Length: 266
Image (cartoon, rainbow, N blue to C red; front, side):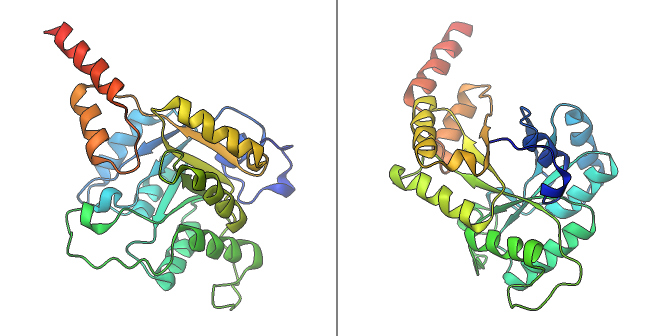
C-alpha cells in the first residue's frame, strides 16, 4: 500500500506516516523502558539506536512487568530528536484512564500510537494484580479513531483539541485458529488502524500463506504492513522464545540448527 504524499491525507503527519505513504521501505526498532526511574537508561539505549531506524517502538510494561511508562519514555525520545511509536495496552487502564493518556501523549508531541490488548498479568512480576481489560485492542482503536476523526470521547462528548495520532495495531499470522488471523486483521482495519506490525517471523512459509490470504481479501490495499524481524543470537535465546514467549512460531528445526552450531563451536 502506498499513497501520494499529500499533506491533506495525513492523520498525524509523523515521519513514520510520511515515509509509509511515500511507499518507502520503513524500519522500526523496539526500545524497552527500564525497571526504574532512570532517564539516563532510556537515553543510553536511544543513543545506541539513533539513526538506525525511522521510528522507535516504546513498550508498555511488556510481558506485564513494571517498567517506566511508555509515554514518559516517548517524551525523552522526542527531546532527543527521535520519533517514538508509543505502545498502549488495555490491561492496566479503564477507558477513562486510556482516553486521558491518549490526550497526554498527543499533548507531549507523540504522533504514533500502537494499540494492544496486552499480555495477561499472570506472565509478569505481579501475577496477583487485577487485570482491567475494560476494552480490547479493537475497541481501543475505535476510541482513538473517534477522538481523532470525530473529535469526540467515547461518551459522545466533544473534544476541543483532538489528538492527532497515526494508529497502529499488532497482527499474529501464527496464532490459532490460523484461518481467523486475516479476519481479525480486517476487524482492526475497520476499527481504524493505519498500520500493522506483525509478530516476529520465524516461519516464513506460514507468513507467506497469511499474506496470500490478506491479498486475496484486498487488505494489503487498506493498511501498511510492517513485518516483525528479530535475530536469534544463541541456542538459549531460541529455546526461551520457543517456550516462553506467547504467539511465536519457533520451529524445532531452528532449535536443531542452533544446537548443531553450538556443538561445532565446542
